[in-house]
Length: 159
Length: 294
Image (cartoon, helix red, strand yellow):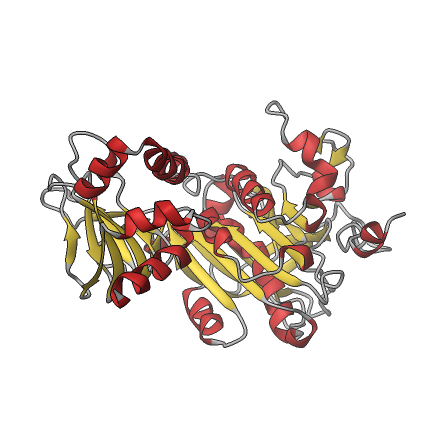
C-alpha cells in the first residue's frame, strides 16, 4: 500500500501529470512501476514493442537513430522532468528510435497495454492522456523541423 | 511615461561614431593574435597600428573591418569591454572578405571603423535575472555581456546562459564555457542540434532550455542573438514563460555598409540597423519583425 501511495505522489509531482485529477491518477498508478537504468544501458530499441512509456525522475536519456556503418546519431536528449516515449499510443506500437541512458536514470514506467485497456473503457482517461501527450509531440515535431533546417549552418558576414 | 518605460529604456546606445572622427575612414589596426575557434570560425585581437589608445565600446556593438583591396564587413565585438588592451572579434568565414581574413597572420594590418550601433542593456538590467540565449556564431556578440556580468556579478540576480550550436564540433569558446559552467553562480547550458554517440551533453534546439526556468519571468531581462528563426522561437518560448516583450532584447542582422545610417543598406522599416540597432528592445520592433518581406 505504501509503495502505491508513494508512486501516486511521485506521479502527481512529475511535470507531465501536473494538475491531474485524483481519479485519473489513481487509475494510472495501477499501471506504474519504478525503474532504474545504468549509464549506457538501452531503455528501448527501434522496432521493439512500445509497451511502456517513462517519466524521467533523474538522469539523461539520448534518443538515437542507428545508421549502419556509423556511430548512432543522437537526435534529442531528455532530462529529469521529461516524458520518454509516445510510440505506445500509435499503432503498430513499435519504438521509432533507440533510447540510451547517458547517465544513471531513474524513472517511473507506465505499462502501455494496461493503460490502453483502461482508456478504451474510460474515454475521459484517454482524453486526459492525449491532451498531455499531443503538445509534447507537437513541440518535438517543431524542434525536429528546426534541427532539419540547420539554422546555424548559414550566415552572412555580420557576426 | 510608465515605470516600465523608465526602467527598460532603449538599449545603451552610444554615439554612432566617435566624435571628431571621420566615420567613413578606417583606422589601421594590427592583428596581435589570431586563433582558430572551430573549422570555419576564428577570433582576432586587434591593436591600433599607430600604437594609440583604444576607444571604448559597449557590449553588443560592432565594428566595420576592412581587408585592404578586398572589402569591408560588419563584425560584432566579442571581447571584454573592460579590457583596454585590444579589440576582439570572432568571425565566421562565409564570404570573400571573411575568407581572406581567416588567412591573415599575426602582424598583418586591417582597417577598422567603429564602434557602431546600440549595445545590450547591461546597466539597465542591474537588479534583474538575466537570460542570455545565443545560437551559432550569434553567441559571440553575447560574450561581452557575459564578461560584464561576471565582472559585476553582485549586481544581478540569477544568470542563465543558454547556447545552441550545430554539433559538438561547432561549440565556440569551449574552455570559457566550461569555466563559466564551473562557477556556482552561473547557470550555463549548452545544447547541439545533432551529435553522435560520443557526445554526452544535451541534444535539441536551444529554445527547449527556456522552459526549464531558473529565472523569475517578472524580473528578467532576456538578450537573444542568433539566426532570426531561432530568435523568433526563442521569443515565443520566453513569452510562454511570461517574459514580456519589453524585457526581451534581440540583435538584428542586416546588410550594414556605412555603419552610421548614411547609405540605407540596412534599412529595417523606419530603422537603420547599423545606427538604431543592432540591439533592439523586442516590443519596439515586434510588428516589423513579423513581416516576412522585411
